[in-house]
Length: 614
Image (cartoon, rainbow, N blue to C red; front, side, top):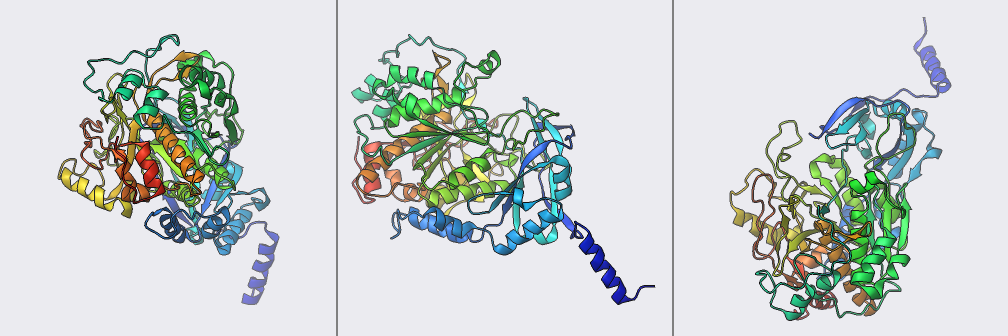
């Protein structure tokens, strides 16, 4: 019989001889119900490799948020004094204790920390591991899931951690997230011949503005760069700061920006900017795509490249010669059961965020035309990605995201994902993040909310169920909600972050794709349009020795809205309802309305400047 001293000594020897320490008790950290359009196919192959991303609790995010709002508020003495990469990283880096505990946990499970990759602030750790190793690490089970419209994912709807790590790890993906960043563009079935000229302005169009310059430049059936530049007042602006000002776009889910198509577009609609098709820069992230060859028949049938072309064609035609960067991020290849190649399927924002946050020099404006239903994204993941957007905003970057193309939600899909399937309007992410600027869509002149019955497009808007209404929205959003009364009661979160913040044309955009003219609808069109206008605003500010706009919303809601044209007709049709209506002032379908560059330019330079009228 062993004495207590002898037993203690034996246990000490056994522990020293074992490569694994005794695991502390595990408890469920997160669970997320499988969204309705996904169904389990079977267990995931044990040797399938995933790029696992481990998010650590940021050391002082509340302080970062304070800095963000101070440098973004035109009434604050620090307005425009954006933070450096080092200042941001110091605020969000995890504690040494958190890093040490996570490293010990990995090593206890036979995972070498020398194989870890880190985000700039070390608040994210990335590891390539096979499914069986991750299942052991997280005490979980991965399965293959198939979407009703095609495509597969490998996910674990529930995962666990040792209890002592619950306060140090905020998120781990890909696990519970079924986030699939869908393109926001809606494509016309009809493809016009490139030789077709812009239709002459109709004299009996009831929606046409009486301004003769706009009437001469615009036609509702085919929106061109000349129309947009004339309508929003940038046509006579000359770029002054192309050596220091930059703008960027995002490509996800295999999209790319075809230089040949972009050149054809510019030859037809902005001949002086043709060289921009050859000079824009492409940055490949995590296996992104820069394919410039002819698409296959299957790719053409799927419309591959329409979104990428739309973005590059709009941005170059409206901002040339401001340099354009195209970020092309992988993360959405189809899952093949016998594939062992590392992949971080459908988690593109983390790869993209960690890439750009690691850059010492950033574009002042970034346009993104991809999103998915907020409830398909686990709360922890949404918070983590949104906090990354806040870091970019604090560094002086303006982020624009589309508000969606299905109004308040596609009919038949408007149910909660909490197991109860209660009727609800569907919020969109990242549009619902309070640290970005969300863009809705309009059509016609004078402008109304954009809809298109031919392809079921309706400009999106709504209220987040994840993010509370930020203070900068309080005065206008509370009034809007009050005016709604009991209408739609229970279908939305009246105290949530409301979107969009503003809008622009998003209907019948001329786009060159596969060498032909293809009109497109969507907030995929309005988002780069607004991004381009604010890139020109930054160009003017930089030329005057001022800071770029950075995070736009505090300025927009306090001062900048004076430079927008109100949109008061139409609604965010969806979920079998008319959805949120456009009204005088801010509304949940067009925000403050559409931009008028001459006024915005003055307001950005001087918050008390007199608003210039058309």
